[in-house]
Amino acid sequence: MGEIGISRHEFYYELRWWEMKAIIRGYRKRYHPGWEQARLVAYNAHYCMGSKTTPPIVSEWLPFTWEKKESIESKLTESDISEMQKMIDEENKRLEAEQGG
Image: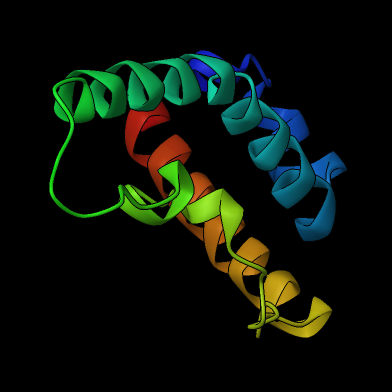
């Protein structure tokens, strides 16, 4: 779906929630090098003239979310996902009935 390039059918019916989570994480990791480079350029521009205090470590100066350890696991269970999929199916059937009728 969208920029990731997964079909709607695959998203709704074929992938498990943990697979989708892994795909999204991988998609986001694609852009990490660009963000790292931008942070380093900004850090060097900020501290290029020196300062009275010792500059902090780059990752402390501007931390990124992916540098933190994930301590909170997803609270979704397979039954939650099944329930959401049922709701989506019902909504799709309703929309098809409206368009077909």
